[in-house]
View 1 (spheres, rainbow, N blue to C red):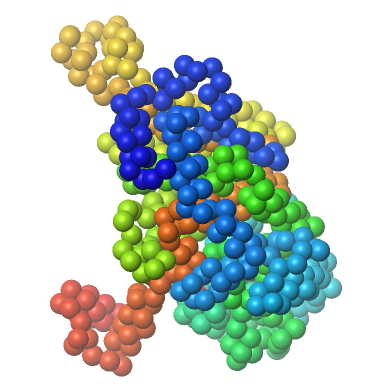
View 2: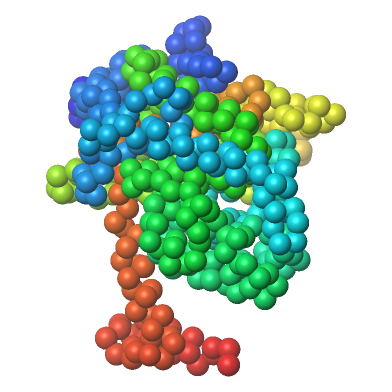
Amino acid sequence: MDWNGLADLGEKARSRHILELFEKDDRDQVFSRTFDGLLFDFSKTNIDETTLSALVALARDAQVEPRRDAMFRGDLINITEDRAVLHTALRAPEGTVIKVGGQDVMPEVLATRARMATFAQAVRDGAFSAQGGKITDVINIGIGGSDLGPVMGVLALAPYHDGPRVHFVSNVDGAHIADTLRGLNPETTLVIVASKTFTTSETMTNAATARDWMAAKVADVGAQFVALSTAEENTAAFGIAPEQVFGFEDWVGGRYSMWGPIGLSMMIAIGPEDFTAFLRGGAAMDAHFREAALADNLPVLLALVGLWHHQVMGYATRAVLPYEQRLLRLPAYLQQLEMESNGKRVAMDGSDLDRVSGPVIWGEPGTNGQHAFYQLIHQGMEIVPCEFMVGAQGHEPDLAHHHTLLVANCLAQSEALMRGRSLDQARAMISDMGFDDAELERQARHRFFPGNRPSTTLAYDRLTPRRLGQIVALYEHRVFVEGVILGINSFDQWGVELGKELAAGLGQILSGEEAADGKDGSTRMLVAYMMGNAAR
Ligand SMILES: O=P(O)(O)OC[C@H]1O[C@](O)(CO)[C@@H](O)[C@@H]1O
């Protein structure tokens, strides 16, 4: 199956209502899959059996299976950086052998995992003694993949958080670190500097500020700093002793790194045992991705539904809508995962892509989003495929009635999006309001919902560490499958470099070391405004 065949199927789908597809009684069964406590329902999309077969054939023809095996094997599939892609090794169980360049990487991974657990436990139980006694607060300083994974995970697993308070500083805006440090005691605070490269300007600036803050009160500042990085020379130059550095290899991409050292803050928060459960969830999804047939493979199906909506149907964005307040940062995490991985314009061989690459990802937990942007989702001119997520249980047994309402809202939204409300129904609703015919028609049109709007629902029993691990790995592999089918290298991110380079030069201009002469008129004007109004 090729894209032209899919385009024809897309045309057919445009003239059909999703509800018609439910005339077949078993649609819910045919268009849903379960795996290890998860239920993925994609029946409320305009995909019929022919389309599903065509999409699966697309995946097969794109060599998803051999490419997947190459990734797990440790082949150098990140061709622009000449690296393997082995974040899966970080969650692989003991006994696994994974070779890169003939060398088994697992002994080192397991040794680091064990060191992390010992350290995290020591911080949690007070055996790691700060100058002021037991650590009360941990600050993770990092950005992008060195922030979003752990911040998302710590929030998601709040019911399991029984370690010290954990704070995250990412933005170079001094407000972020100032607001975080205010009220903290340097003597009982541990600072984790998380940076794969240990050169990222935001992180190094924040780390230096934290070091100054601590130095004002603490004699041995280095003792309360930890580094998570692949760059040992840089961590040493910063003054962090090797025993407080948790290293990893360049075959772990930043946005795929929360499973290893970058997850240390999360491990300190929830404890090594629950962190291990998170890893096991990820490893279970890895096994499923490797073993399940394409048509039953959750990451593959999620990817195919995404490609159908974005590349075939032309829907520009995708909303991620967790009905789980604690997944507050999941949309931001998935933004980086998807948009940094698949927001590309050239294929592996450097030629221009012949179709759009990854979609814009956005979202917010329900029910908050309902009172903000769902108006557009239901009645706007753009169709936004929605990915709902919801657990059958919360962690608050005394508040079960809240949870029932939460779930009811989630299910109501996907039903409303699909079903809509006809003009006749809208007219009937307001028929006793005393409007004349013209006004009735006008009012009814405002209350009309076109429906036929696609969504998927990922349901799970409860957001445990294991479930979170499964969900994160599910999305990682989904992004991989999309990338393979689009012919993209999902593991580089050259698109972030130009802005970084220009920012370095503009820093010099704004501090008066360089002139703005070579800049365009707009940039010169903005520089002049900033310099003219800068704090003195
Ligand atoms: O961990 P580092 O090296 O500080 O990089 C942080 C982030 O910056 C990026 O390189 C670009 O934004 C991301 O890919 C990465 O997660």
